[in-house]
Length: 527
Image (cartoon, rainbow, N blue to C red; front, side, top):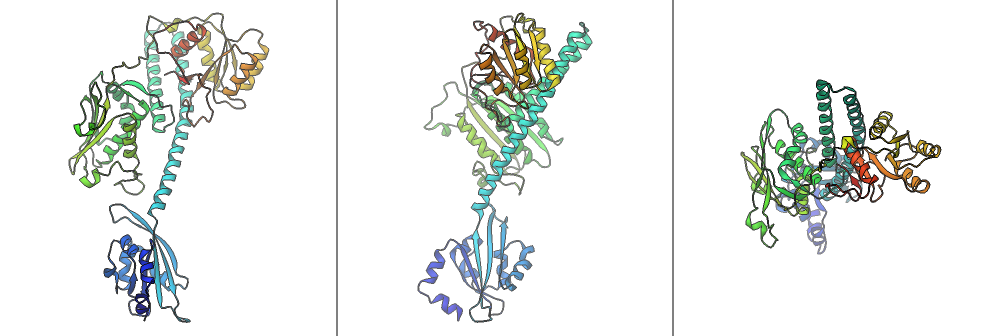
């Protein structure tokens, strides 16, 4: 009777078939509760055909409705409940997992009887993906804040260690053994500072600056960050050519390297080898069709693993956002799509070759530049250790007592008169008590009570001739500090290096002083 009612309506079958929501109807009055109707939407979601479901008993249909057999008893109990029930199901037995909801509704055709069981199936994959995107964005934001916070505290500690190492070296009276040990401490501080910057790049918390980089030297610098990502079963080998200058954002290049190396590691669960190479090589001709070719050719970064490889269907989709072959909770599908987008930003190309059971190779092509990489040394015979700034006065505001002592000691070594303050409010009191001119204000950006930026603004009103230098363990412009740096300001990153601080002070004390270093501009983060 019910089959007759459903199939002989002139409108109802067409309406039900047009719905995007899946519908399956069971006849509760017959043995086995067979399917008497299913629309196209549910068949598409369950990857079957209407004729395959028709007349199939309810318990057999469960295999289609819910691949997870552990939930079958729960669904059967829902059919016996007067109000039915609702269940959300994830099907991972397909190439791309899908999520759908199962809403079971008993339908009473006659009084005190349940004749039909209607199952409403709705695809919730898009909603789940959107929720996943929001959660991923929140996790990345949290990671950036965590990286910035760790950097601040870690850089303060390194500044203190480095400062006392400098004091100890001066007090060692030329003892070569002691000096060599202290030099090793200073070298370790530099490595720690570089590692912190790389972690900040991973957390996307530092300023992205386009600069000319020697691709080979840059890769060598990344070893301290990449090698700890591996376990003892994986060998990393580096083969690089020097003097391949490319214009790129080092922070973005760091993110690219981390993604590629981590993917290579995950493709070798039983161990293996990752080869990282830098060479001069042009991209395949088909990539250059319709695009302006680099006049000097290309530098190529090649990352090769001997892992599990991937089939062609997977290889074609690896740059699609949210596509991943990793298990639940092990991958978001965002890493390689981000790599692809970053390469586009840097006018580069990326290709991938892979053979199942043999491994995968990524080629990243960067246009070569005729410019020379910026040298981070002071030339023209300047010995910054011997710089004297006698007659100048500086007020230092820093809430970390040991660091306050160290920075004050650095300035005194240069011959300056130094006033120290433990925070912004204390700095205002100290400058009020000081009758002479204050040439420089060196202030930490983030301090309790009154932060460095507000302190500088007050100094501009009280002492307009005082020049401000900011100090911070947070990344310049990063969200972790939550304080907007004034445009055109000078920022000395922690750990504070004596020579860099001396150079900035000498430059600011003698505006016409010419030096071969690149002119500082913008929110200047001296590195």
